[in-house]
Amino acid sequence: MNWLIHDYREDDLAAVVHLIDSTAGLGQESVFSLAECIAALTSRQPAVVAVHDGVPIGAALAQVAGAGERAWVMRIAIAPAWRGRGLPSALLRELERRLVDARVRRIAYVLPEEELLGEGLRNAGYERRPAAAYFEKTEPAAGSAAGSLEELGGRVLGGDLWEQVAGMTAEKDLIERRIVLPLAEPERAARHGVRPPRAITLFGPPGTGKTTFARAIASRLGWPFVELLPSRLADEGNLAAALRSAFTRIGELERVLVFIDEVEEIAPVRGEAGQGGGGGVGGGMHAMHGVTNELLKLIPGFRERDGRLLVCATNSVRSIDPAFLRTGRFDYVIPIGTPDPAARAAIWSRYAPALGRTDVDVTALVEASERFSPADIEHAARLAAQTAFERDDAEAGASTADYLDAIAASRPTVTTAMVEAFRADIGSHARL
Ligand SMILES: Nc1ncnc2c1ncn2[C@@H]1O[C@H](COP(=O)(O)OP(=O)(O)O)[C@@H](O)[C@H]1O
Ligand SMILES: [Mg+2]
Image (tube, rainbow, N blue to C red; front, side, top):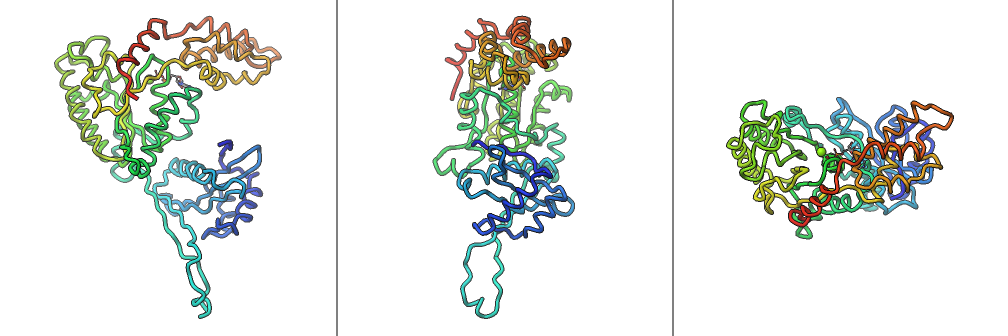
């Protein structure tokens, strides 16, 4: 939808008060009074405002209570013309994110009840007070689970990482439909007989955004993100045992996205273990089989519970033991390739602020950066900005020539041979 949601600022006050006040008669009344809402806003309680064409069209505000573990959603006000378009849930999601960042664990929303009481009570001198429908949501990372999350080095990723994934619309769309929505709306999925995925593998050349997607999925779901680093687990001595205890801790978390990068090192094709730069993993082929087997044993238990997703990533899907990736263990095996021209344009715009300069020819940059990964574009854009900075002339920012020079100087990481191999891997390994 074409609105922007930002944190409440002081100069939003008049508009937000007007929204709250003018929508009170439209079934959007609240158990909190306008005065209480204003008091919350002026004391900088968490609040978000949706804006369309510079005009505020909705607001959501909360009040953190007591020791800060609980918050009340005070009001979600939507301009009449914008009702029924999903704005309330977008606002609530943004508000919840602020609250989770502020370490709030329980969020409550008290809705006024519909007109249910009869005339009788009123006639008997009773004053009608709205009864309450009480909705409560418990956020993850509570009590001992918080300890487990910390020990695992995991955390809830703030910010809107999903929106920050530029371009890549085909991959984004697929991941949204297959992964995010069934996990975010399990009841709706169940109604249609869809079982939410529990484990996926992302594969593709380096720098194409596999890690970025894994983090974005966690951010989008609002789930804690835990990365298991085989090299770090191996420091504890026995990698298989370390893996087992990590999964025990993971089991204590209410919701979690577990990320394993370079998974081919943990589950290599049989007979290839220990080769190809296992880095700190060590232990040779025999030990590696033990680790692969351990992970294979752990996945079924992991799959049994709701609220979890395992995301594995690899630059070399053909180096993974085929048995490891089979259906039943991994629901989807998704290719993430180098960006197409449209995606490159989006990524250029994300990393090159000077593209705002009217004379920069984005099309030329897109054409010149074929096979560039998002990481390559990020690097080239930084190089061009640095050139402009060092020149420091009247015209601020990099020019088309600066960008083209940077592109020429940086060469794509992904070779044509890698593109060929990736295409072949899609044929042999992808499962969508
Ligand atoms: N779609 C994208 N939009 C913007 N930046 C991206 C995108 N994909 C990747 N990046 C950036 O490129 C860099 C490399 O991405 P990463 O996810 O680490 O690649 P991979 O895990 O596939 O090797 C990161 O700095 C990331 O921010
Ligand atoms: Mg990565």
